[in-house]
Amino acid sequence: MDIRELREQMDGIDRELVALYCRRMETAREIGRYKQANNLPVLDQAREQELLDKVAKLAGPENEQGIRALYQLLLEQSRRRQEQDRQEP
Image (cartoon, rainbow, N blue to C red):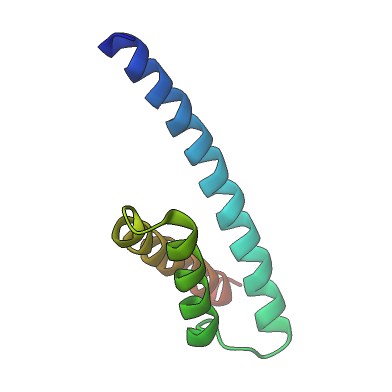
């Protein structure tokens, strides 16, 4: 494979990642609505730690640090979305 083909492959992966990110944020919004309706806090530290540990294990030692960083950012964005929704009328 040449660099052009590899970049096309990467572009396809990026399209998938963007679609998955959008789905994840919509699900985070739904979770936020549930939490608000049930008077639950936005932040659930135990759940976040459990998720970080799970994805680190799935990624394996070579990718553990990167996947933890990625998921910490995803979790931060999910919380931000939920908090914004609580402030909207």
